[in-house]
Length: 106
Image (tube, rainbow, N blue to C red):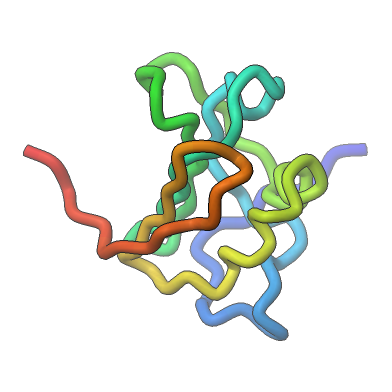
């Protein structure tokens, strides 16, 4: 079954939960389970990324629906209330998320 991947949905999300079919760009290492999600960014434009925090994302990412990522790591569900322009990070999947304002690098 195929369906549209949604982008640009208004935040905050109803009931503080990610909308079904919301698209997220994910490092393949996280998608395939080789690395945990260590860095999640909710960009100013409303887009989301999930990274492993250790590998270069260039050529190593895919667009998927966020519900698939939440099914694999239910700790991600709590990030639906994270406002645009924020990132969450952790060193391991056992640690709690730390939040900070997202700043673009040079």
